[in-house]
Image (tube, rainbow, N blue to C red; front, side, top):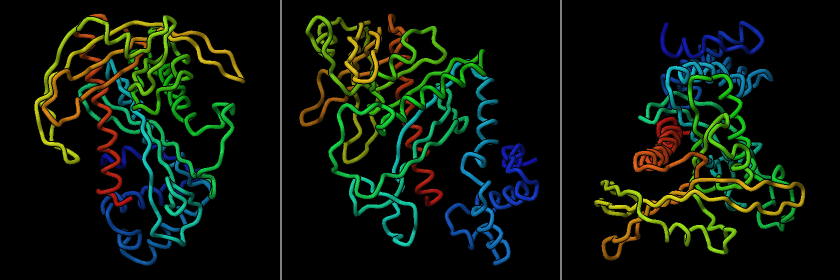
Amino acid sequence: MSALAAELDGIDLGDQRLNRRARRTLAKLGDKPTVSIPAACGGWRETRAAYRLVDHAAVTAAAVLAPHIACTVERMGAHPRVLCIEDTSELDYTGRPSMQGLGPLNLETRQGLYLHPTLALTPERLCLGLLGVHRWVRAPGSLGQDKDPNRPLEAKESVRWVDGYRQVNELAEQLPNTRLTYVADREADLYDLFVEAPCPEAAADWLVRGQHDRVLANGKTLRQHLGEAAVLTETTFERPASHGCKARTVHQEIRVVRITLPAPRRPDRALPEVEITALLASEPHPPAGEEPVEWLLLTNLPADTPEQALEKLQWYLCRWQIEVYFRLLKSGCRI
């Protein structure tokens, strides 16, 4: 059995004919990911069958992905630690005005939809597969409208991060011998996410890049508190060239504090205080004319030793693999 056949073996669209057609169509599209459906199918009969397939009410993204996700979860069970990485990317279809069901991206003139997948991989960056894909379309004319600052989290686009962490928590119950760690970038710096599992004994750990410089109970900001902490350890690495930046050696100092965050006020709920670990990896002496390389990381896990701190930093750097996934979709598969 081929790798693709094994991945789709459990597909269930409610009809064996649909299942067989889905396997054949996905195999053809997988063999030629950069071409159109007619070009991949190689004939009008197969093309018509492919369009009928995707038009069928039972053929949803969730149903097609379900067997792959099941295979991903099975692969995860063979590893002691798995990182569950989330991020958002836009799919821009501005150049296809006849396409229905689109909404504005960052401008009303740019039309498309948003993709928010969860990717599972090991700390050694072995990709195990997808755990889910959340998609949404903004309502036409919604950009620039005043929004109620007191609206509940469930009414905000940012709820996708909290929902993603909840799903990872639920999955952790199926994998008692595998520790899951949710990893996300600055958009996931949400207090509502932190209180979902404030202690290391929770079902899944979390590690997010900090965006907000919160004020602590002593009146100092989080960054001020970290700046007064002693250097726990140091690290040196080679940063590759990217986005107009030259390749260079980066030397960082790592400071770690364990703190209690005061609970923010919410009009619809009362939130508890939460104890977290904050880790600041900063570059004290960048070359002249260069921006310092710095990461503020927040986690429910301890980082009391140099080894623990460096481990958390390496986990966060694995987040780049989801950017590789987006590049494969857009440049490799022409999505």
